[in-house]
Image (cartoon, rainbow, N blue to C red; front, top):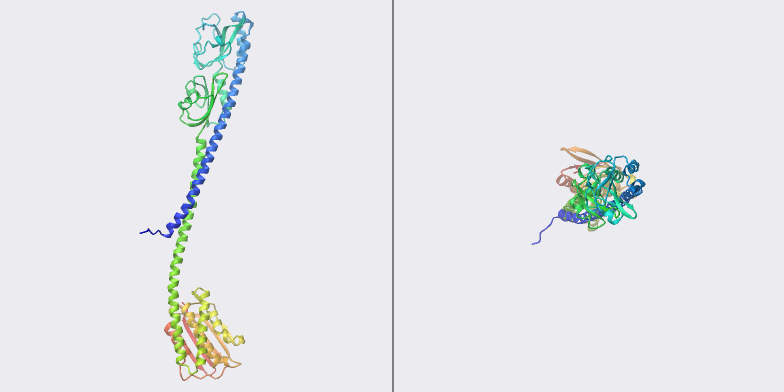
Length: 502
């Protein structure tokens, strides 16, 4: 047995089935836009890293060139280290903070330190991987981060060879202040959402923002360290030492072997994504609720229309039955009292026409109410087509319910027919006045209509009661709960009708 689904549920499924794919499509578009923004952000990070690496290399080259000029000192050529001290002091004056120039021989013995007093015994140079490369390669070298033997602080050194007769006799080293590297980062860092670091050849940080006091001397975060030696440069997603998710790019210098890395907080991209997805879902939900509301309302209206249709069918059956009964009653009364068949046919056709006019008026109002003025006008119109001034119609607009409208229309037709045959409309001077007004009877609104004839032939009460009189008296009293008074005054017929309008 098939499950019967109600109309509201079916319309709700239709709305949801239409809107949910659109919401999903909008969410996909939003996520695709986020992915494009993510790639664009990574590209910006990589460009910034590259430009910063060039700035760092430029600074290092400038320092290296100054040291190479210092290595050509005549005092150093004569091993006059006291005289060389003046040259070293001149070189160091261009730097705000106190740095050190150290000269060591091939065995790693320090023969000069700008920080030590003349004649002071100096310790051996701290050994680090590549410490003797100046003598082997005869080119400048750049150290990783290490702890100095004299200052005992974390330092990085730039080492240049000192030549004599084409051979390297000394290693001249200079330890730039780490604050200089911090300054470069501060100048290049766009905002506080960025993490910027300089790493040595071992992946140890020697300059960083944020939290330099806690992170300098530490190795790169595990996620970055695992990637930074696989390629000279790359774009990767990492997690910082503080635990923030970053979109990171790094570039390793071919000059120094140092690595510049920068990352932007991924939250700066995921937060707008979350807002856009929430906004998309919110708008979609509101639209779906609106659609469901319209669907439920439409389903309710359709259900009411269906119920109304069934009611109208039943009402139509009832009205057809009543109409047929009324036609049967009119036919029986008309032909039962007829002495002349042609005249009876004319009466019967007139009465059916009156019913038709009333039905037409009610059809225009969808069988709800008929206007009293329209009922009166349509009932007497056939009898005054050429002499409209002989009938005066006066009264307010009153809505009359369908059953009462039919009966009043037929009664007015009977009165107009009798007036045309025997009463005020049967000669050339008679007139009819039709007045009505609303009253209150038994707590319900009623209409009182007065039909007054004048100027016609003398009136006498008939010896027998015809169909018209019976219709007026019994129709109002029996069917409509009203009353009717007919006065056969010699000056003219007067008929007073009173019945509820609803």
